[in-house]
Image 1 (tube, helix red, strand yellow):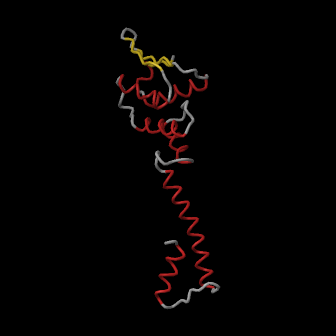
Image 2: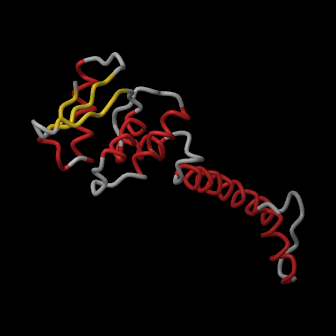
Length: 154
């Protein structure tokens, strides 16, 4: 039932109003209904944008700014995958197994290696990255990796 039908049914039951096309009360209820329709559409959009799986516009942009600003795949599914991957890892997960998840977060491909003699973790990226992408990804990885001082993006 739309807003107009709902309002006119409820007001009609009171017996105080005669709601018929061409009357002032009819026109007033139509105006209210139009305003409510705009509000309902905005609420539906807001609800859709609150969840990664259904976001299509500003909600996904906000989530990306919050958890993973830089990634390579700019498709809708790639963006959503990067946000979901970022939300699944915390800065407490610093084992080599969890480091592999970082590739999903930033949608980069490569290999993590640990040098026992140097105590350094290296990520050798197999993607072609611009200098600005490399810098942005390195800055983002620092958020997830407290051991960043001993980490290199090669």
